[in-house]
Length: 195
Image (tube, rainbow, N blue to C red; front, side, top):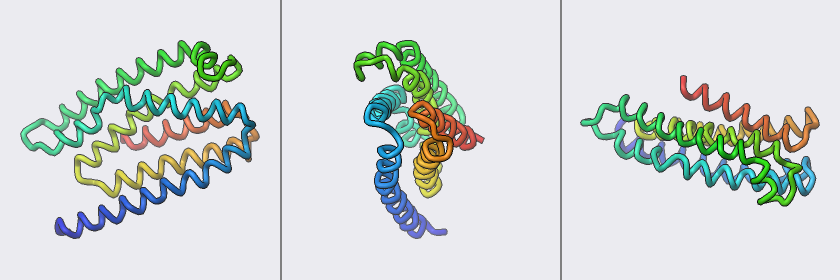
């Protein structure tokens, strides 16, 4: 496949996957709001915001560095990838551990109650899982496998939606079950990506 055709199909794939990610909100919000009570939804929203910010912070911009420097033929790519992966994983595990240990304080600070401490205990695992996923996605992007990276990134969102839907509507769980299903499914999805 020539470069022009690859670029045009990559652009089309990325555009379609970005649109699919936008549609995700229209699917996920009714599922979550109908399946959880108001306080549980608030805890879910706080967890998503906190883990999102801490995932970006703990990745240290290394996924972007992998894409930028991974295309440099002078560098040893395997060494670069493993070094950046190790650093970002160690930092994210450290930050996730802090969230895990301080979950009671975080719950009281952001939600005014200790009722949702388990949500943050379980949700702390999302930080290293998502950093690991970002590094894997960046690996694909640095190898010019843009379509695969976009499809996997979008697939991760839909796996989380399916897991949350199953937790709410099939297993009749509360917020802790929803977060547990998201953590487990994203973890499995990310580990498979490492193979």
